[in-house]
Image (cartoon, rainbow, N blue to C red; front, side):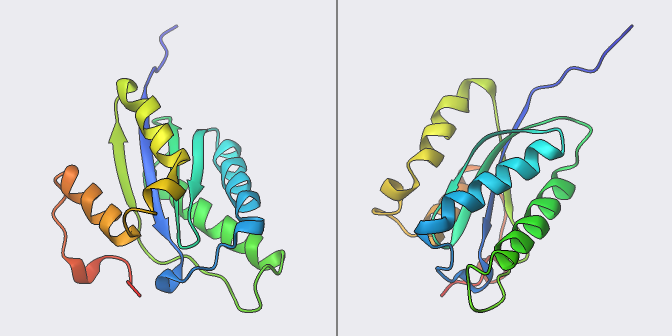
Length: 152
């Protein structure tokens, strides 16, 4: 019997609405673990989820049965409900519309993993805006800055 075999590695990058610094360090890891659980519940493999107070990087091994947009929709919807149900904030939490998604080969997994793991270090040297634009340019993605995330 023939099977379907794939090897698809993608990195999602998405931001807090208004790019506010709302993902507080004392509960941020709970949110990242919850996002990993959402990805697993969709029969996908989270390699690492990490980020800063205003954005998230999720590195995923994606099967061809799952669309890129369906997974990120479910991650953002369910994680925002999680944050709101936990009452981590006094106001309603939301993710910004849109996201970045970037593909990688098997040989790049360790490098991408370490990059996402070390977000605090990277952001001591550059802003999220600088990081995101650099990624778009590296992947040769045409973009208009006015249609990127709302920058503070």
